[in-house]
Image (cartoon, rainbow, N blue to C red; front, side):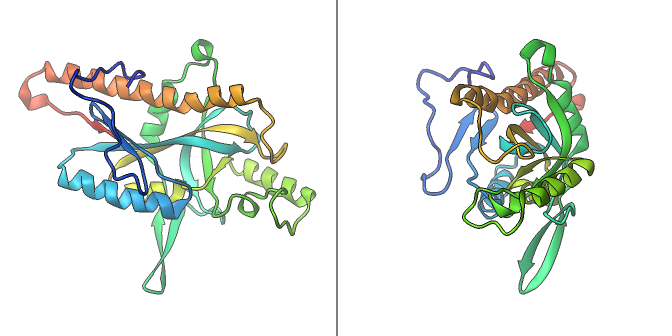
Length: 256
């Protein structure tokens, strides 16, 4: 609410609009902000429910943007990554589910124009952080799936880990997350423009444990929110301008 410079009426308070069992959801102006849990199964539950909500609310041209943290691959901690496409662990741009015993694949490419627009709103000279566009691998696992050495099990060497990560880097992959394929595929199926904006808190090539101080990590975590808030402010400003033109030209987006 502060980032968007919006104010609530005196009789309104910010409140969690869900029953609190699975997710938390808040609404400020035309923006819904909702938690999605960790991993594709969790975010897919949320997206099915949100997409149905958009339909029943007759929301026109919503935009879905996921923000969060990620593990970087060959990039400095604190770098904001805007995903160009979401890849599975086989480097395929698809989200795979088993439906009635059969494997079904859905494309997990993201909106390139939206990614570029978000990138254009970053100003390293002004706010002192870098924003890049690159491929994201959506891992099925927090440890072995991201080639970490610090899990309960590890059946590979540090040398094979580095070779694997460097190979990913050579293919344009810049980070790991655990939700992007489901997010990209489900929003694409619903014809909803979407983007993934995450900040790297570690370079996985250099290690598995976050070495930065809590204060630095806390500051980094604000960067995706700041970038997305700029986008929302821009959309809201554009909508105000559109309302000043004749009715036949009215258009715009709702931002989620």
